[in-house]
Length: 283
Image 1 (cartoon, rainbow, N blue to C red):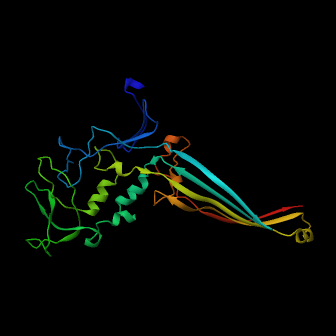
Image 2: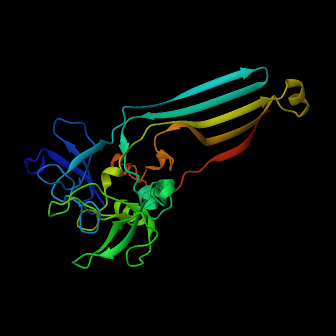
Image 3: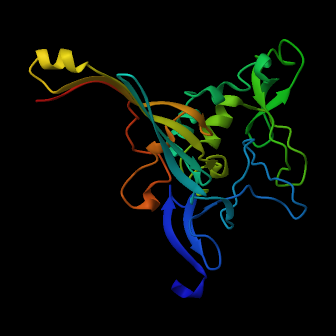
């Protein structure tokens, strides 16, 4: 290994936010991310802006890119002149990092980003003021306005942890601030994005293709000067029987022919579904 480190860097993502590595004695394809910074007692550290502080000096394993199994099933059913072909694919195990979906979450474009949007969705009630250093902070309240007439919001979130001085965090932030900061781009030198939340198990069972055909009787085909005529209707990439990642086609994690480029959906095209009719004839 380079420098006798025991680790081979396969790819770095988003300015040192995550890495794909191979470690001596372990399975190839470990996904490493920056963790939340903690104090000597293991308490999570919260920054003055109310967001968790990311530790730029440490790495933790968030998953492994290698699947446990991949495969498929091909089934053919025939009855009289009808023929049904069914093709299913599956993948079990292995993690991916769909950064494109997480960036959508940061901009409020996924269902997950609706959490805490109001009291009905778990949001806390708070008003905003400034601390002694001039930082804007959110203060919990049960009133309709703040003590000086401040507007009360109901989309608050409170990060459980300690401030740098060891006191408990009480700064309530908006859910828009949380999602925009937590699911955005970049390593700790650029942002407070938590890439451990990006890494997800990629399990799925997909209905790859269904084709239903009908072969015309020989007496009919002969009248058309043909030996055999078959009409078929087909659909490809139809639906998932099961998938662990909801918002994308997990097969879209393909950024190139090399397997190390198949971890993220950033820059890839959306999946397509195809329907068609087919006519086969022999003369």
